[in-house]
Image (cartoon, rainbow, N blue to C red; front, side):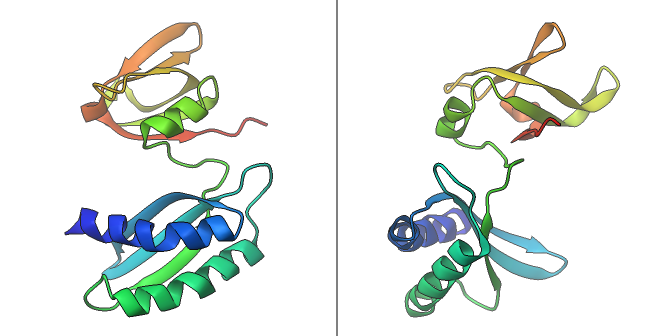
Length: 155
């Protein structure tokens, strides 16, 4: 059921998002602190997603959600920018940001720590393994051990 909700919402929202000059980075349906949240994360090629983009998409998608009614019960609907430190989830995300600074968070400690910062070197579509250059060493993180891979902003 969970996957179907995000897929249906993606199908409903995508044309509206494109019409607003943005791309739909991700759709998330999650339970936090006892409440359900449906979130759309936007990206905008060549510039930053701003509050007006989010508002425009929100106002256009909300009636579509009301009409399609893909979610039983109450939830909070949010539209926001994917952000500079967005999570990389799909093969296309990894391909787009190859060579970029990333942070990898693991479920279990490895070498006494759970987070590694480095440069995205490769992504294996078959296994989901991510290779990151940390310092001078290439480290491979298997999909099963990886909680999150996100972009990292360097100052």
